[in-house]
Length: 503
Image 1: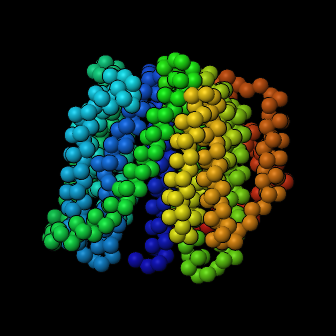
Image 2: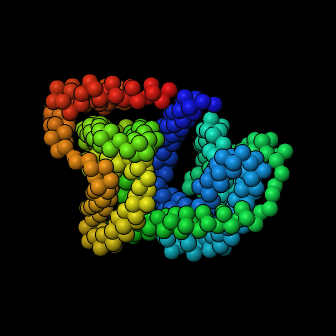
Image 3: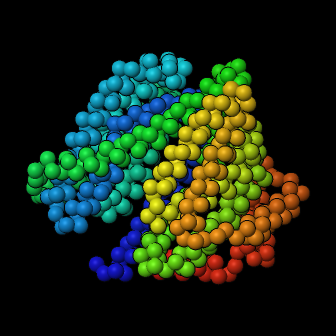
């Protein structure tokens, strides 16, 4: 395979993963709408807490083994050592199986107490036990997924992820219709069974590939594995632990603020189960650009082309700002309609409008992290995420009981703004990039101008009418950006050239 073919493979794998992520996100959004109408806001809040506790258990059980499997298998592939690949995956499976059985057993035995301590309802014990029983299968699936990633067999992974998602949704819908279990338990069970089926298919394909490869001595490979999993696992546990604490603090703090546990869990469910999926949905496209940027930035850095690095950074941040302003403007303009049409919730519409301005920070931070990865600055990204997560926990603990949702909004805004500030500061130090504030001003003027123009017209109360209204806003905003030179013809040509060069 020549350099051009490798580049094309990289591009198509990136695009395939992006298309797969976008498709899965869209399917998940439709499923979330269905579930929200079945469970209500309070049910979504309880399910989110259960998934938070279960997710932390999964992090403890995996201990960074998926990334370790990918790294070890990729190293052995680089040495043209198929036996080493099989040995690496065998060690990862043993490690993951032992750890997941221990964590799953503890979670199963403590399910009642965990449900009362963290979820405030005894009904949470059953879904936690289901999660614990299937935990070893989930971890083994992640090991094989790491192998397929290292082997470059992305197409198979994407196909199986679609299979798993559709099987999961089908099982959940059937189970809810037949009232086999409560909706939350059925969601966990359906997802777990689908993961099990996907694991069996992965295992079958894996065994066909490696059955002729001998397994060498496990001890040296186990030592290499532990060198990877101990720091990776500790980092994942720290991040996930802070996220778990945040998610547990929020409903408890809202309950102290409102005095009502049911209304607090409903508000939490509305924000996490309805609002965040909507405002983060468009960010999938940014991760596509981010994935393409990583090799581009790495190449420029390796060749010492500092000027090109600065140019790429400026252009990507400027285009991301325009994209984020468009998405934020749409959220503010159509938040009420989106909340009512998708979720049948007026509160969801209000919160979508409130949180939509923050997508500017969220999206810019996402693309900044992608650029930093290309410049080999991941250590700083992890450090900043940890610092701001600690800040978030502290602010939530202080502000939520007194100010309720206002305190949550304040903590969310400040922590993410600080994260972005630290990331952009690191980017400026590493590249010499200086922000051009006139670009921000022009984009903001274009967004405000399009918003003021569109707000004069009434929006249709149908999905088709809302889509047409939003499309009109985007077209007007784009024209304003072009005439104000917030975006130029060269920017559009650059994007096309970047994609064609990868092809």
